[in-house]
Image 1 (cartoon, rainbow, N blue to C red):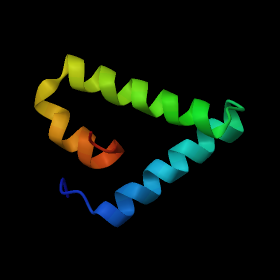
Image 2: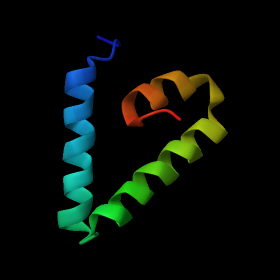
Image 3: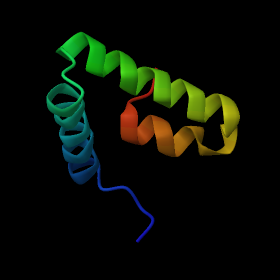
Length: 60
């Protein structure tokens, strides 16, 4: 239940990016920046979630 299926997770990130583009009318770069900002915020505030967040939104 709590494990990450990388194919499913990537699909959900793609869906979220598409929603940002359509509902907030962002372009690709803007949607990616929003996701990166959210990722960095969550990791900063909840470092114990960094592994899960990086798996879901891409680690650097």
